Image (cartoon, rainbow, N blue to C red; front, top):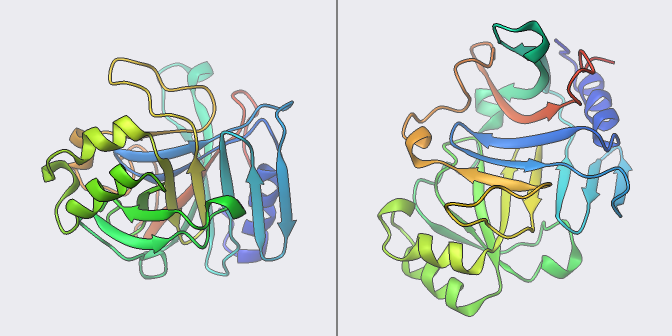
Length: 241
């Protein structure tokens, strides 16, 4: 466990610059994942204010925070060789808190988008991120904007037609926490399809119904909330420096 913000950011930065490392951001039942191929064209911006990794398929922003805590753990398995190492970058409950929206809400232009060309597009919070994550879609498509505005103030899965409109127009998915952001530009696969290689999202209503910030099998100490997770290559061992 790393308890100082500077040490935590050093670990986050090292993994962000490693093309073999995957990332995830979300809650139990709604998650965005970012990964890239070693030979994939990429833009990297890294300084003391944060790290940004952007490809044609998605992007990652990692932010430093003095209160950040990194938990190094293994996912349990009956078979030793199947155990997967991971790290969870966490913050205290109160520090991790975001807007906590529970209904579809228009945020406005996405001025914090990773790419300049996306900053004029409209961002809508889907209202499924509990208090720690904003799980959003971003679009400039008029029909989807109209459908999302018609759903404002209602729970996502109770708003007629909005899920179908999202699937039809496949907007960018944007997940945001106090420690970073993942953007996914790839299309949303059909219900009977498989997630594409590279950045993608999962939204699973049955799991969201549990209203958990993370799976019970992830050993996060009481009082902390995971805000960004790191997935080193399988077999690489601990993610520690």
